[in-house]
Structures are given as structure tokens and as C-alpha cells.
Length: 156
Image 1 (tube, helix red, strand yellow):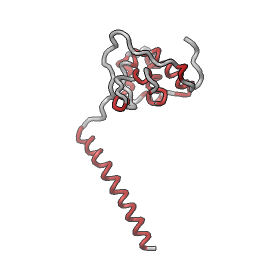
Image 2 (cartoon, helix red, strand yellow; image 1 turned 90 degrees about the vertical axis):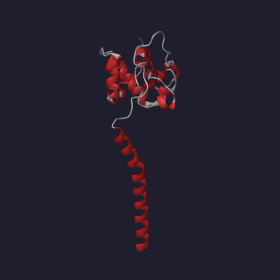
Image 3 (tube, rainbow, N blue to C red; image 1 turned 90 degrees about the horizontal axis):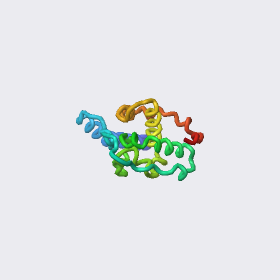
Image 4 (cartoon, helix red, strand yellow; image 1 turned 60 degrees about the vertical axis):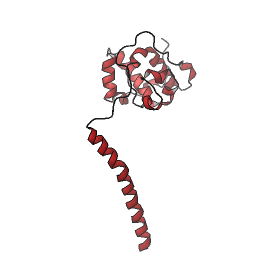
């Protein structure tokens, strides 16, 4: 029984040591930088000329996804100036939130959909792309009530 307890304690200690060895360097490196994580890629100015089209909502069967693509299409120039906090700039080479909806990426990503809907809602409240970006950077997109988009949007 004592041997079993010692083995269990040893395993627990090893797990704790491993966790500390992984977490501590990351925390120290962030603390040493004195800065928070950088903002993902976006364009600082309005697009000059055409911007990419978003995919057709009819390509998707999920109503929430269809609605996200509908709304993204309505504010493409705003999305062009927004970062995407799923960090698809790193993994997919995206240069702004618009790229998520010019591809199928946005359909499988709750972050992208919330940010696009947030951008649409804020632009219809009269906010500029820069003001919307500030809200996205503060994480306000997390508060989007996705249940409002569970029914098909009226044609416009």
C-alpha cells in the first residue's frame, strides 16, 4: 500500500514539474516583453478599388453560417480593415477578416462569424471601421448574441 502511494505521489510530482516547466517559460517570456499579444493582420486604410467577394451563402446549409456570409457581404470594406482573432493570419495567411469570408474558413470558425456579425451590427450603429476595430481588439465581438441569427434573414 505504501509503495502504491509513493508511485502515485511520484506521478503527481512529475506532472506538476512538467506543467511548471511548460507554463513558466511562456509566462516569463510574455512578462519580459512587457506587451500583450500583437493584433492580428488587418488593413489600416479603406480599400482602394475592389475588394474580394464573399462566398455565396447558398454554399452552406447551416442558417447561422448563411447569415454570417450574408452580413459579411454587406460590410466587405469594413471587414477588410478588421483583424481576426482566430489568428488565421498566421495559419492561413489571411490579411484581414474579409479573407475568412472570401473562403470557406469563416463557415467553420465561431470567432470569424462573431467578428463579422459584430462588424455589421456596429457599422449599422454608425461606427467607423477604426472604431469597430477598437471594439474587436477589446473583445467586444464575444458578446454577439448568435441566437438572433438562427433564423433566415429577410432578403435585402
